[in-house]
Length: 404
Picture (cartoon, rainbow, N blue to C red):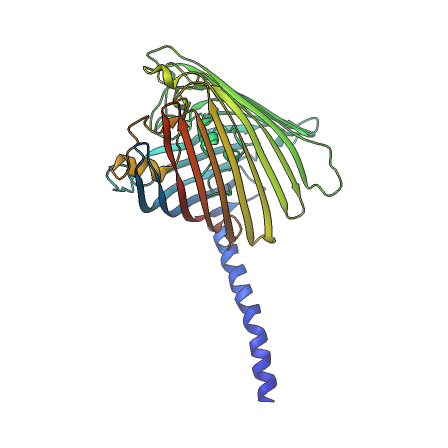
């Protein structure tokens, strides 16, 4: 009798642990929901919070030919904000950053207001009860919002798969100098298998809310779901691009790129996922002609679920090429931080070159889906310029991401 009771209790342990985890995950996912209702003028009041703690180690050879190693840990991101939805069709969204990681040169980190990332209002006419047609979305908005080109930027920092985005994806990112999103007008319409958006944005930069004192950036995106095939859960094409018109004295987005564009292909089947990006653009005018000219790149990201919704293998190969000797830039935050603190010598080209290869292999563990996960990986960078080696070496890093 005692043995039977003991065996029964042992069987209950994994069931109890699984239920406790489910309860915790449900609580985390619902933590920010203060109010929800389908009736009345206010439909949703939701708070938002995101934190990412990250640690990394780098070992490589700098532009002077010297070997170096360095390590760092930090709160890579902390974001706060909230959503307010009313009359179903109207949304006010606010997200602001209180840290972007440690200062590269001093290693210090402060937790205080940095800038608004999202701060906008929009109305979706497709949600009105008397809306005609089969529109899934018919949206008009104004304010700060992200503009997304490469595949890794199509997902928020809470959802993308590697520890850090590829250098190509960050090269094509239409951000301001502080890493925040621009402000402007846009419209977005989705119907059937197509989703189209177009916007006009200011290149003026401000931590709170920018005006229109400088130039303008035009942005467009078209997403199309391909016809379903047996075994494929997702087959999707995305084309997006931007061009900005500025004078020499104007502030500029995207580190001064004149234009940029990308084409994305996504294929998902069973446990396999394959995302790829082909992109390019033109650097703006610079005091150094070696940093001007055109560039292009490609990235391939095969991924495989080792355990469905729990354990995911992530890989990536990225290559970039520039027409001028310093037309592209090393993106590794660890190499640039080591250079800023004198641990490595990047003075030859300032971390810039004309050919760059990046290979990444990692594994992600999902405690509560994307709401709480551990993302770890190792990557190899090799960036060269006409003058020779800029940097080559290995980086190992791991990030714990949580959001509600």
